[in-house]
Length: 450
Image (cartoon, rainbow, N blue to C red; front, side, top):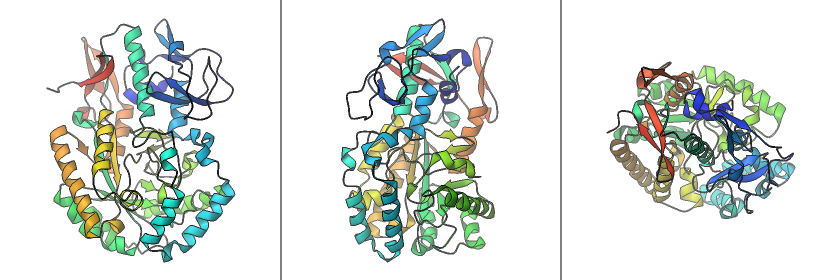
């Protein structure tokens, strides 16, 4: 059995029987599985494409059944993991810059960064990111390749087995349509000192958020300061080590810093982590002792490190739960794109809602102190508050999402007297849902919805 579909939907095992057939290619490459689903990995019956911009081979016609087993011309677990872990990015022409040059230029930038005002930094960053619109994959502004692969596989099972619907455990508690997570990365002393006012603003819209604090060098973090967040129902997580851009440059130095990061996690009594500037190497995450990470963008066209996990859902990296960033950062919106509106955020929210994913934000206290930016953030909070009320959205802290997703991972559906019930931790918060095909597309129905 290929467990990735079972783990994604939490459906009964008999509906997620998937195998692989055919001689897989020696080299991985990009391909399509139907119209929208793009994968990266080894596959049978075609020649892999090294670049996503090419006309990609469609392997969907080679899918079939052997008894009740869906046989795919690729390993679904491998392909999904390749996307989530960004293993496709080494094949992209946008990541072919020599590592030594990237390391040197990054080191120089972070050395002089404290001396550079925002107006200078943004011009340097714009120059570095100038080709972002030419990147063909992941798809901007939201990439749902993992969701499309999962949905296409379930559609095929429904069609070929002539089933009306397949039961599964709904993604979010109490049948919420999607989850929302607001986070604030604190970069400098002025941002640290603005945290109280930012909490006031969030509170005025009934929003509890998470603040990521840098434990070394940038500013002092004292116990009484940490207590103010928790006393008000907000959350604190560790933000990098010293935010100098060097955390993932070299393995041994990373391991040394990871030991210190783990100490800070215990000292700050938190289970969450996010790296500086969204730098990451998911293959090294087993050195961390955090419970959840928030360092992987869905689409990283406008981040210093390109790539993206191509999913709007949380996923596990070994023992760590990844809560991906699924919307554009405030700094990027204001200073790289020059957009002082919530239009792009609204577009991303709508796309994520279509897949019932996690809507996650990074808004820095350092960059919303100025009135113009703060007004835009206030407009975003008002919009989210309205959406939460009208669309049944779950606004939660990262730790709450972590606890829910881990509980859901342990749940299972049990058939009793012709009806399905949920067993496992937090089962009282979970809902049975059904996937079916209507008008040639997969739709969901949550039990108890009117």
